[in-house]
Length: 188
Image 1: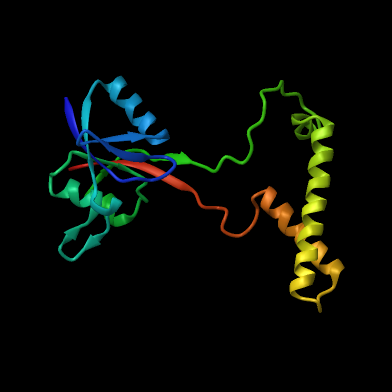
Image 2 (image 1 turned 120 degrees about the vertical axis):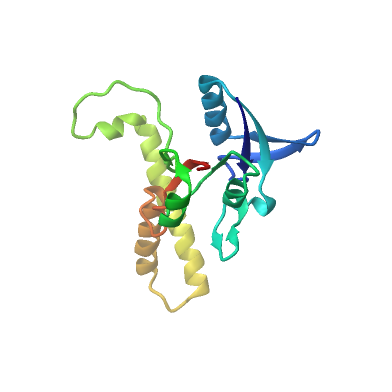
C-alpha cells in the first residue's frame, strides 16, 4: 500500500527539506512515522503544505494540510493537530501522541525508597555548584536591576530574582504548561 502524506514543518519534532524534488523529513515525529510505516508495511510520498499551515476551517473549506486531505490531494496528514470539535467531526483522527518538554536528563540509577532520593541523582559537588551558580546569577541580576532602577531596594531585588531563577529552573513559571499533542489525520 502506498500513501500520500501531507506534512508541515514543526521544529524540532518535524524538519523538512527538498532533495532532488522530493520532500524529506527528519526529527522525532518522522522517526515515529517511519517506524509505523515499517511495522504496518506501507510506503509513502510526502507533500508539503503551502506555508506549513496545519489547517483551519474557512467558509470555502479547509486550509493547509487538512484542506489537502478534504480535497483528496493526500490520504493522511501528519502533524501536531489540536483535537477540536470541528476537526474531530470532519476527519478521522488517530489516538494522540503526547510530547513534553525535557526538563532534565538523568543517569539511570537504582531506585530505593527514601525521603531525599531525588538528591542522589547528582553528586554533592554538583548540587553545591548549582547552589552557588544560582546565587551568583541572582546577584548579577540584582546589580543590573539596581543600575536600571536605583530607587528599588537591593534586598527586594535579590529575593525577587532568586524566586525567578528558581521558578525557571523548576519550570513552574507562567506559560510553561504548553503541552503538545500530535495526531495523524485520516480522510473519511
